[in-house]
Amino acid sequence: MPSFNDFITFEYRHEHVLEHDPEHVLEHDFDFNIQQKLTKRLPYSPPKIYDAKGDLSKRWYVYFSYRNPKDGKLTRMKNIYGNVNQYKTKRDRLALLSKYSSRLLRLLELGFNPYQDNLEKFLESKKRISAQDQKGQVVVQEKPSLQNIPVQTSSGSNQSNSVKEEEKKVIPKDMLIKNAFMDALERKTPGVKQSTIQGYTYSVNSFLDFMKKKYPKLKSIDQIDKKVAQSFMTERKKSVGAKTYNNTRINLSAVMQDMVDHDLLDTHPFEKIKNLKTQPLRHKTYKPEEVKKIFDYLKDADPILLLYVQFIAYGIFRPLEVNRLKIGDIDLVNKQVELKTKTRKRIIKRLPRILLDVLPDLSHLDSNNYLFTPTEIGGVWDASENNRRDHFSKRYKFVVKDKFKMHKDYTLYSFRHTFISFIYAELRKQHSQFAAKSLLMEITGHQTLTALDKYLRDHSIEIAEDHSHYLDNSIYGEL
Image (cartoon, rainbow, N blue to C red; front, side):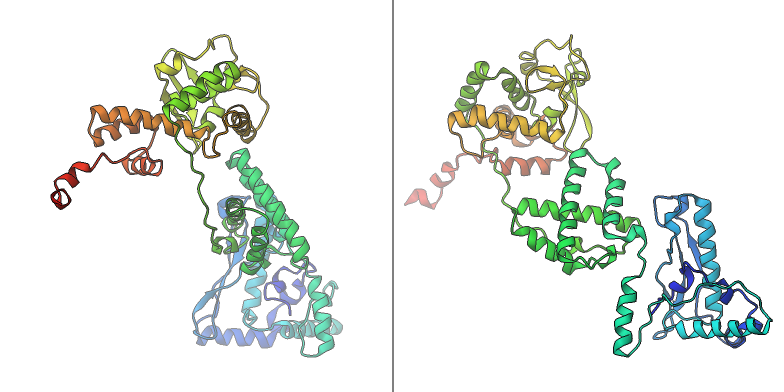
């Protein structure tokens, strides 16, 4: 059965049914509508055009409301898109939407009802026009027939034909599953970093491969429901860990949320799927004697890796922040460095004297070069952010961890935690707990005292003082 919207957006057009004088062609429908206007509230609201304030990257459409026969309240009907969003200029879109709006208003005035099957009414109107044509009262150009409209009937054979015809139904290009995902990826690319879009793309390709194998008959993006999404995630759980599983769900949720934001969907199913519980990586803190042993060894074994570690330790930087550093970010005159944090926000940090003392001469180097590369300080390195990070992580494992047979929880990141613990221990020798934390916040970059407290607890940096004297003076001391 054709939807109400089909009568408005059919490609083979039917203006000859809708645009003749209703008094002669559709007299019965017109009289009914006039009576309704005079005696009742109109059952519909006038059609309106949504043009997204001229934004061609969003979906434009016609919308209206119709009274629900159950409660008599005006209810928003499904948006009418047709082929309008295939056009790339405002003028073309407005021209087509105006046509849709005009057709819709004419249908509503003639008594067409979105809550009913209107095919019989349409064919009857067409039949009357054909009879008028034969009498010569109305001359119109012949139009294609409605033979391609899928019609739902009660007979078994006709139902079979209906299924075949339904398969032929044309789905707008931007609603095709693959197209919808590719378009969403293209829209999101400018606003996120390269590693993020790579993660999105990998997750989308995995999902599309799954859909092709498991649900080949699904074609439109709005056919992907929670059952389909959960089926994919269940399959995914069999081959990946909890962290990768959660990242896949987050990636697909972000991409499909873009479709919601651009009016392709009302909601998406991945937001309703829960993450798996994960065991966070524990970055163990080094002991002072372990730090000395590692630093002494790297002086001869790998000086570049040593300086890399010293930036993390002395500067209290994250490894990812060190990977992003370029020669031009370092201001030796003012003894500071400009860097991008994990949130991509650029901040200024003080370069401590202990780090400046080990820094080589950078004055002759190109300001656009990365500070750290595999073979030199201040060289060209054509690699992604993830690959640069992975290089030094694997290098540290091969050069240091394998050499000293260290546990997997000892990482490059551990040097940041270790030196924060050294600094905090020294601050507590001279200051109260509150004052020490306030000074430490300026060094670590934590935005709130609550966040710093959580960090200190999570990494066992803040340890309670000896409580023996409480027991000495308690009931226990009298036993």
